[in-house]
Length: 170
Image (cartoon, rainbow, N blue to C red; front, side, top):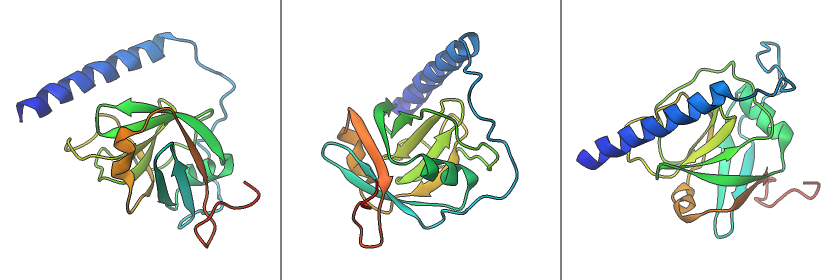
């Protein structure tokens, strides 16, 4: 219990420092405005693969504009960032829609988006009751998310076709 409190406090301090640095730094004014409320093509049920050096995790996307925005960007190769021993983060080259409901609740396998990053996260451990930042849910990995704990370096996000293989045009 004491370890949880200390880790939570440390995580709060780190996130506060990162947020403070972000506020004082230059913002990219060329980022697209993704707060539109118009229609979009749903990607609910679409599966993507997260492929690291020793791990492959299949994630099923939900019916959100942010998930559709991510799908439109694939394939992507991103650098993994350790997020306090419970999630791996990945910084996106551009922002996704942020009009969806956010949550701090998570389960192992949840895949989400943090707009302030703009970062993706896959949760591989449930050592905390909730996240410190609000996250937009993008989807869920039924199995294999725990294996991301030992990964570092880069990860590739790409589509999975109906047979479970990478699509040929990706």
